[in-house]
Length: 428
Image (cartoon, rainbow, N blue to C red; front, side):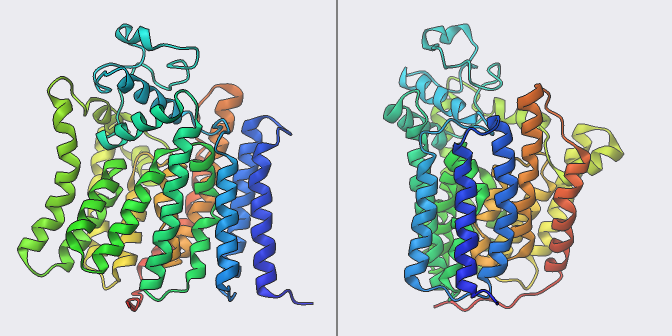
């Protein structure tokens, strides 16, 4: 007997939900549970994406599904992160600011901050010898979260939960505006990657998504100034939206509007740094990160194997990224797909691609429904194998085989999609 599509969708959504909730159950070592849940639910997510394309979803079922996805996120609000300890850096920066200290002035292990030490902090902070690299807007959020919950994770996760809710709302509005079936909001609501990276591990990136999406929404509605301010705030969390600005620049007809397209987001970001530049160098750690950090970057690893020089490889990747982006900017693709492919290329050519970085692509899936991104959000779960190895043996080692398995199907799909000129969606 053939299964009804809506029943099949309900079954796979339930399986993803149960699978994610298993992360709460200490059957195995937490790192083992994290790895198995991440990979297993990611495979189920691919099934769900295939089913939803051929399923009619009523408005009531959609809202029930979104509610269930938010409840799954809520269940992790007090859970200890497993895949990353970045949240403790946020916590430390918030604590330092609560003591009226410039967060860019000292590294966590500095003797000048001994009065701020506790049993948890800064012992739980990774790279305590390195100053913070986060932008001021993020630092202000850390301060607010520390005021909310102190040295407990729930304050940070509540803020991220609110951001996730805002992202789902903005996706719903964008889908309505472009007359795309609103059922596709489930492609983000039930995607395991953002749930595990934000609800469980508490990464900051989720805060940037609603600014990006509402910025796109307002821009399409020709409310340009507030749209550009929101894009600037998204870049203040992580400068991913920077690759979108040339898309908007080329859409404008007058040079005044083109200059505003670049100037307003840039000014929104840069003005935040001025108060800190008097007594510190807020770019110090960011510069160190940009010059030296590497992980899970497929093009970077390939070029590095040939050049064997870190800085030359980074320069080559930057050149290749620029050329690839130019092809997208001057293509016939619509604004949504140009945004999607620009973010995708940024990830492909980046030296560092942690799984939560891929969530910047996942949040665009409801708008574009591209299989390259669907598969990427699933195969990015394989990075958990590196985390598992580190948690069990204390060695951070990236497997070349894992890298190939993660990226080979993704790049094949990406090349096929880039060669296709999709029709522009209809706006309301």
